[in-house]
Image (cartoon, rainbow, N blue to C red; front, side, top):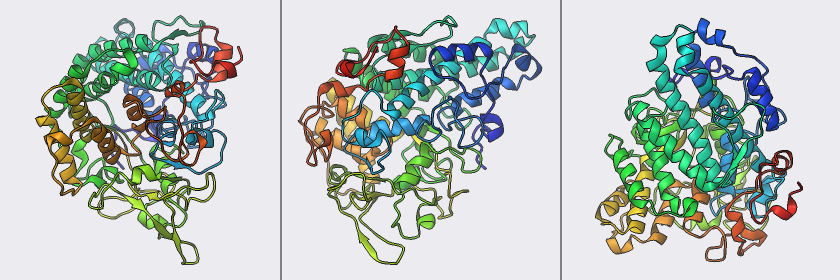
Length: 541
């Protein structure tokens, strides 16, 4: 089993809810499924509970609930589509030119055709997960102040817990970062929120400033880059999140922060991370320890035996595994759910010599007959032979051995990695008008790993090239929608992909879809919240 900061089922499912947490969550209509009560005595009698409960906070990104894969932290939220990273991935990828999910489940076709509404279940799940993470991280911070440790006679633990608190603030900042990106506003909760009161809305600029200030404040208390236990964040993770915040600052806060983005990227690049020699090794079952693992800045650990959930990387790999894969369990290490394919616009961005083009154009059915896949997606919500399969992520190790389970994967979610940093640096350099020579070298390093032999010059390093290169390097890693919006390509008609706007060849969609709506039930129950423009007519107050 992996050494993932001892995140086993016995640690991950430590509960941080309290009676007061339950009552306040009820105000949000986000009710924790587990009704256990943790009091000061739990921490006083068990000093290890501080780290155990930190594990639960990290697990909020990896699993759906407090027991098995079928449980949910939040009452009424499905353990499958209601898992944090599954809802996130669907909203960031299926809504773009990179992926199409062929299932006809409620909410999925609408996300794939740019026709989602205020009642979409994935949008609601994401919003509730953000709210839940904000609540449990804030409650942990309330329970771990210096004064409380002093009252418990645990003053000696203050330096250790100080690090835990910094990591907790990072996790909360990450969720609010997702809120800025996806919703632009949110009902805000922190450790100062008065229990029993409805969360007050913070707008995009307020959230931007809050996330920036939180990340800058915690950096001194985080461990140095590459010195923390695997699966925990450090200074480099905070620099990475700041770099992404600054890269999107013009869209999110109306401010040019490209110089700040470059500075954060330089901090990371100088911290000892290296580009892995094999691109595909980044997405295999042993990506926590194979020869490319030093590229990772922060991953979300997965373990087929001890971190079981129907979301996160299990969802990505199971859904990409099509029914006509040859030797499914041998090639991908999972049983397969037969769901997700690429769209032609992504596939067509690759040249024949690009080793990052990990696609499947044909398969074999159960009778041994060859099945041709059509790159052209002429029908939606039908057979996955429409669209090429993707084989980028697999539950198989670099030595060919399968993961520990065919139902749940060992492949860690590559949230932050150096390849992304190189491309952020290049984009910020172009937008910020600084010397592009260093940026060119970074991009060349990525393309050399990909086996691309064509020369690249400074004149080739345009914004359009960077957007396409981000697709080639980072496809299906959860950044595409954000990238398209930043480049002004997600809405409007300057860039179309199949089924954008629910038209086969693609059509323009309105700019209001650059943000998702706040869920209808949250608007109806909290008078402090307002709906995003464009969605008001379908939201009842």
